[in-house]
Length: 294
Image 1 (cartoon, helix red, strand yellow):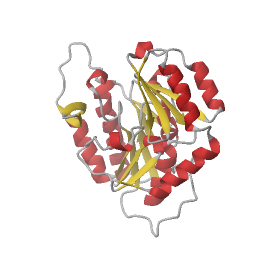
Image 2: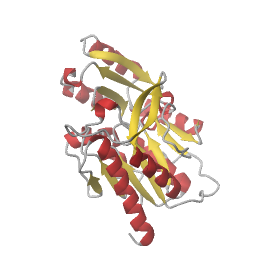
Image 3: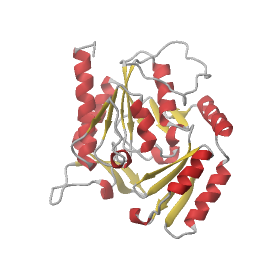
């Protein structure tokens, strides 16, 4: 099954002169709570020893996010044998704090708003994204005003605009986030989506998607097959369009019991689930190399 671009992909950008050489698989992976974990999201079994860790992010010099040493080795392996693409809702600046130990040719930040090529943003992509948002979603200022009204209720610790593309809120505690179903319905009518991930609430234009940017990477590389991993509803489109999709046994998708015919779910959650999903992808890609018809 080849990757399907779907309605959110753009086809108006100029085609590269020739498909880049390389392996036939793209491996697109969400970062937070998929590949990398803060200490509050480790979800280690009660009484379990902490595994050997690699620090993948520092904030003001202090360790902020981690993966297991086994996961770090698998990231390096996938980078060497496939086109590994970090795909994140983080802003460009937040993504640039992350060090996975490899230098991917492509990375996707701001939920598909930025396509980085060798670390540099593709300005044509940014322009295409902004044009589509302007055509299909109500103004960012309106959504920011709605976010400010939510913040006035006292449960919001931080309210921010991400790269002038979407809004996100950080609650003091996950349990303090109120029922937002009414807001979600109103946003949907205005071309926006709402996603709750841990203590964060994302208000994102419906046409701003990770899968559209992944489709562009597939187009540029000429690769025929996609493996994808993620934990949130913002990852669902990317997973649905993949040949192999993996989600950890935690997070927003797990809460919704999200499934798809191409989906594998880890048995472990948290930090260990992050390593397990990489093991699944690496194993399937290895099997495909030995059996090209898979």
